[in-house]
Image (cartoon, rainbow, N blue to C red; front, side):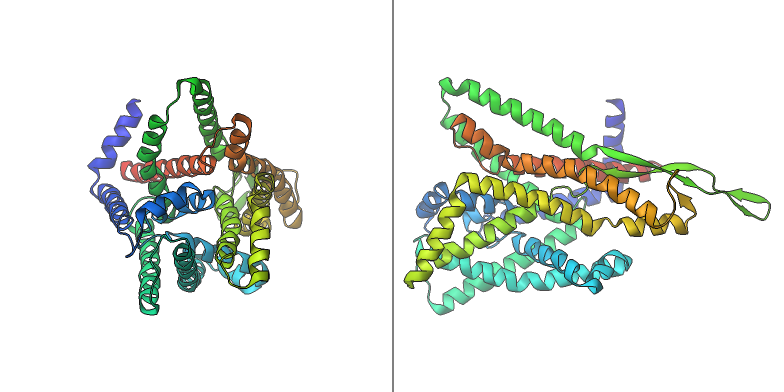
Length: 423
């Protein structure tokens, strides 16, 4: 406890660190102000009714930082940027040039890769804003728009999404933590007072055991997320002795840490994007005047609305994307080559290909545990709703995972910055 207060005082005593924290808070305040500015012509009564009957948009609202529930000018949130990043990650599998840029060209390659993601964000934001407006217009949430008003709204919403992407990157560069994650985090936290007040308003004494069960599950999930996030498998590494002149270098032993949850919360974000984007398009096509298109869209939406199908598809997508993202971001061949170049080896394993295969074997087993855990967390609210029969917030497990992961990451970053200043 004493160490905590020492770190806390050190954080706010340091001018640079204090400036970073206040910059982050200021940027998040600007985001919350933007999220409260609605687009013109919104019927708030119909909007509230529409959201209360649409679980799909409740899921999507979490990644807009709460802006979608207000139909604000930043209603798309960081969704288009996340989708653009997913597309770029998928392209690394098909394009060796992109994979080399992302993994081997260092910081310059990653900056160029991020720039491509930004460029893809703009057309995606245009497409998503048009789809949302036409869908909400057909539901009576937005008044009928003239062509000029439609184009104006699309430009405003697209600009809001690009502005939010810029704010997120400013937080990453000049603030503390990952800007995109903090924007999603702030949206989740901002919705807590409303959720608590609604729960208090609908409080039923007979449901106290269920409330306690939910609280117990939430506590267990928080502990499990912290344990899995922090857990790692150390691989022992020994550096060979090298004689240079009259001095002997190397001969030391260390370890290579492999995390169980190497991918973090990214697989859940990927899986939700894959599940939600087709639903958005199908809901738009459902209002088509063409009979066949309308019938097919309604049939596919009916399949996706099935809770069993949705839960299984969600779990499998999270499981698959955990392996995919781990494979993209962690290359055993590159690690093995780096170890060999630096005169290091894993005891009992030959350098080169054998080392790469050894690391890949361990990583595959660890990723299996991480993938099963993430998949379980993703579908946990659906399981709880099926067991208790009470309609719960379907993003509860995902939101909890995001909040805990972002808080852990933020604490680590602040602690690292404080340690640098302390030394």
